[in-house]
View 1: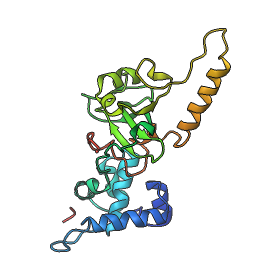
View 2 (view 1 turned 90 degrees about the vertical axis):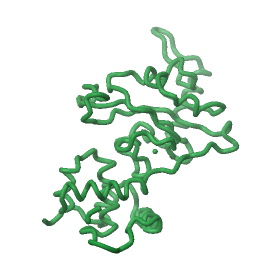
View 3 (view 1 turned 180 degrees about the vertical axis):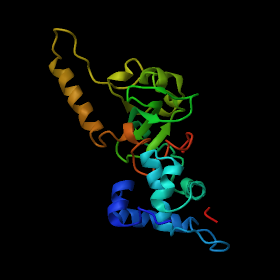
View 4 (view 1 turned 60 degrees about the vertical axis):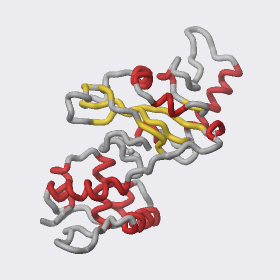
Length: 245
């Protein structure tokens, strides 16, 4: 069965969000970590580059294994084995807090991830059966610091944050959130009151807040569903850090 996607530049950049040079470094890292196995037994039907691309597509598009199979010309069981083998190698290692944590800026945001589990999903404002996942991202490195267990998609961000244990990761660290995180112990923009303009100092604060969050626009909100392949918290249950034969 012929596949549609291959490890060509156009597909790699479109589905992984990485430039070709970055993809090459990622491929080298996966190889060095033993991603290609021992080269004994039945060989994989896809080369390593296409297997890495397959995992990237799985993380970023929320396609099912049954849908991914025809795209790469393999069976859904093969897709499952590839993801089980290479998925952990593309996931982030646990992130330790640096010594200068007080000087770091972290961003908190949530995202609605389409799921098929009725125990954690709910019909949400994105018109899909989704779960609400809270994510902490370093504003400078764009690395995912931590992510919370999923909550029903109808749950507000502030309630999901309070119900999680993410606050303990943020002690002595400056954390920025949007207006949905009022009274959550983080810096949020000043809100306009009816018939009352913001004070000059409040406008300055909001501008600084927007500037920091713009370092990685929308990343913390999309890291689970559409973010780089190095943040695969959508598929793997939250990690404290997260074969075709």
